[in-house]
Image (tube, rainbow over all chains, first blue to last red; front, side):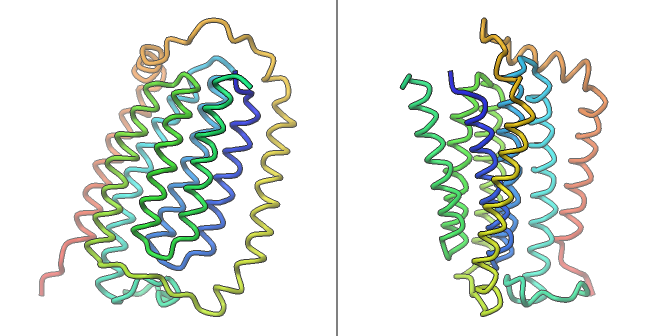
Length: 100
Length: 167
């Protein structure tokens, strides 16, 4: 069996890489993808603890996280299309006003 | 080194390489394909953990639906190579340092507080999928119904946002 700690360490590494991508990348779509990476890292921790504690609550929560991520991707990509149409750019440094 | 450990390290390495590739690639479509590698590797890890249903949902919803949506939007907007300014290059080294500190802190805290979790017995497989459906439709039925409302709102919001304004 693989120790639970290994999964937790992998989850923390993936979450850290997601945070780094979030602050380092400049393309708004890639920034959005790094949020998905962070959600995936948290899902891995949920499933690892679910298996370690022999309880299924963690897996049910992963399903809810996936549903919320899908809803978030829909709305977020709609906003990205709107920004790209109004500003003609995807660079977040050129999107510095909330006003459209 | 047993077989599950070998599978774990192969999949974990694949996931970390995919995440690093997401950061290092300049073009958004390459980043999206790297993210798909991460998600498939995570689905393999879920199989290793005995969560077959979550693994299938991960492939279908994340690897399929959400990433197809991303690739579709990238191609629709014709997103090119990202440009870095001096200020954003400056954010790299301190950001990396802070992220390493964050990951180390999370790992240390969780590993320290869950030292007792390791001792649980590993006898018998959990009835994963039937157990999940029992919990989902009995204990978590109100949150489950709320998610359908959430998706409805999200679909309506995306439709309103993406439509062209009439003048």
